[in-house]
Length: 107
Length: 122
Image 1: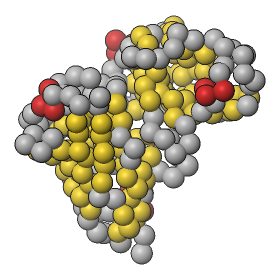
Image 2: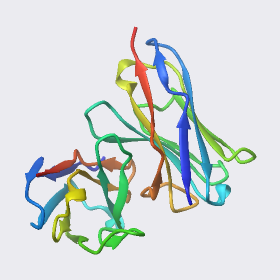
Image 3: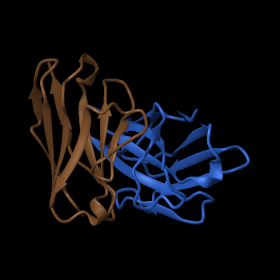
Image 4: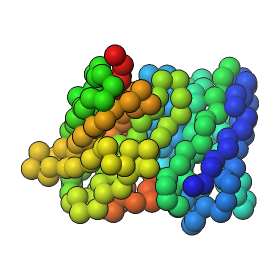
């Protein structure tokens, strides 16, 4: 099974700053099939990015995804107050599907 | 607009059974796979099971294989998760989520319900 390691565990930033979240896969993810989700307290996750770099419907362009080998990155260019949440990566290119442990972006 | 509404969670004793339901609307029900993902209290996300658009293919995480059964009823636009032999490790919020594909194996999830809490405790 592919293990996804997210770092840092917690990111402390201010509104307007850039956030860079990392997700490292233990082996190659087939087709770069990796998604990023945002989850706020008491809410369900929401997909932000799929296919490593494609924004989901309705997601602002301040969210972007990239990949280099087994290293995936989610960048939030300028943090808005509503962006403070927990972010998870998920690989769906290899069975079984796996999620990373999450990165909390806090003020 | 896509809506997924889970129900059926609650408190169950170790070794017991529970059946979760998810009512779907806002999309062609038989055209898309549906999945269950769970989240233990204060923990991350774990994929549980997926069923293809018309139910001919099902997939399970090793942690629930042989204990959980996923099914769907197209006449009611509902998906179910029958959970047997429950243990404390099954305590979690269970989310129903829609795949953007028919088959569902190897997919991300584009819509999620709000979840239903299952607590396994004596």
